[in-house]
Image (tube, rainbow, N blue to C red; front, side, top):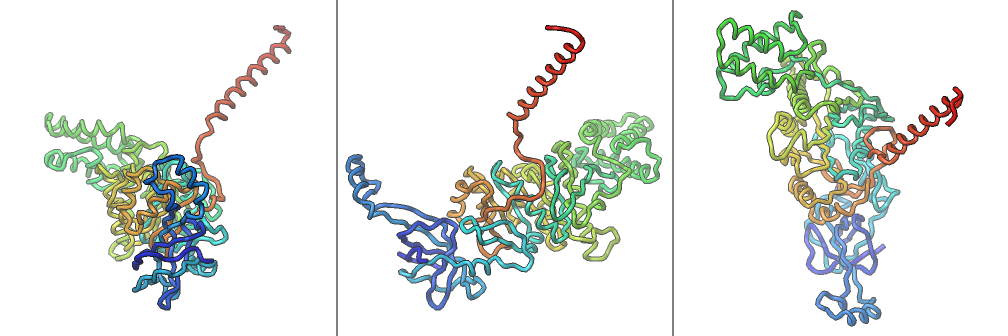
Length: 499
């Protein structure tokens, strides 16, 4: 079906067309010229009327023209060129001729476009529900992914669909679950393995603990005292002679002993004060009776680190510790220079990425997320950053996400931040983000041969995290109170009391 004709000057990347029908933004079209069959996507549509232009200010004149001038209506649109259908979607080297007909792409072409070797089914085309959208799994796992949306746009459902599809390939998914959404989830393709947010301090590096306690980088004397106590505390833990499970308390007690033996050295007291300040924050973080947290990861499972009861500072420590260790252990596994290895690739999903990798402040978790984003693909570590506030996600980390699933975004600053981090997100696609319905998304990147408007499948399993039904909550309370009163009154009547 012909939907338009090319007009004006055309380029290698886009053409403008005029139509007498109303196509839809996101629909795929084809153009045949110079022996090629070129695929494109409608990215922009405008309706207009030459007789009813903005220079007319007379309301009665506009009213008269509108009654008789409907034939002057026109539809103008813009098509983004995606590539030659018969040449593996390579961009043509010549622009389309003005006057070239633009036709809707047929179903056979579209099904071929979304035919991939290792399919991850996300849903169906927004404008053609009979065409399913499959993306390639490997680029997601090796080249990272961002899932971005305003609150309530369908972000959690999208994450759940993705996890379930990956479990179908036995990929070990590791979720940093900030709100406990996935702890009790049920996935059709795999099981959930809940991991406690605890670290055995013997697996933590000196620099990790030093930053935890806020020993300054130029505090050389404090660092010397702290290092000596740190080494002794680790030995006590490994020997099994430590008097407490609290690693920071052990270090504190060692320094307290030293200060009494050597006299009240101000530097030792300063370190003790820093440890004392940190103990309230991190007292529940350590457990010397567990192994390395990475040994809890199970292949083919959704491995969920439950951070719902942890504050931001504890989450920061856990994320940086896991990112650092996983990268080092995967390097050891690949290079074969050490027996301390992580023997399989892992795909990390970081919920609330704007907290764990903030844009305008430094944190240990942010530094290691950036590091894995840059180096992880070489060693089989994939990242998925999930956020409802893209503008506050670190730009460097976001720009390393070579795939994006973007659901509804209304705030202009969010849109600009995402566009600056993605070369393939055009202004016309950005303009579509506020008009997406719940569950609709723009999918682009290495995982898909073409940018796509997708209606994400509804997750078939079970998870927590939907909006709380507050009205029903209070209605249930009122109902229970009424039932309790009725019960007491009945008991009183049975005992012979009469009101």
